[in-house]
Image (cartoon, rainbow, N blue to C red; front, top):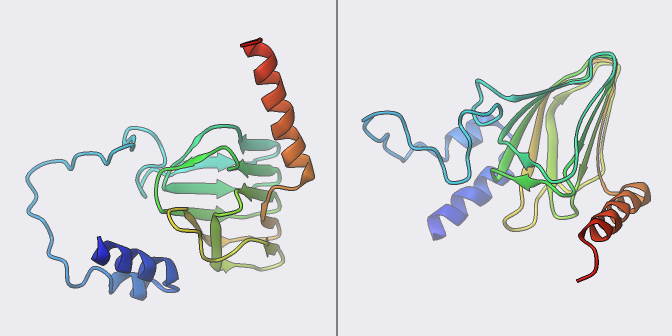
Amino acid sequence: MEELDERLERALLARTYAELDALFEDLQAAPVTGPPAPAVGSHPQLPGYSAEDPLLLSGGLSTDSRTGPWDVPPFIRIEGGAGTVRLNCLQARAQAPVIDIEIVGSMGTIVIVTPEDWAANTDRLSRSWGSVACKIASTPAAGKPLLLLHGSVGMGSVSIRHANRFDLRKLEKQARQRRQLEGPR
């Protein structure tokens, strides 16, 4: 457990791929005996659970969003287009300690709303005429995920933030509606 904690801490503090590669240099590859068993809680048949098949969210000319209770897979690709992509992670369950998010910006808007104890790193996100506003910590609380954003913003905008009053009111309204549907206890 001590070695795992040390490697995880070094991974979360890494700023380059070389720093991540160094974490595995002393490990030996396991002999290949067949397809690996899926990790507990993973869904290899669904998009987002391998780097080759990320969950694709595309704004196009309209809107794409994920909100409410949902599982955040380890690999996401966001194509802003000219529309809006919104990831609301307030009720989400992260399926990995590091969530790799590739941004393919254009002219659209990308908004990511996270719980207070999540973190994001935008060091690998290039900007041309676009803007990036990351208003959350770069180091997550223990056991919480790090969103690792990379790619290009283009002429669009990327905003990573915690919940605002509007988001919190919406959550409270949804909770009241659920309680009404459940009826008196």
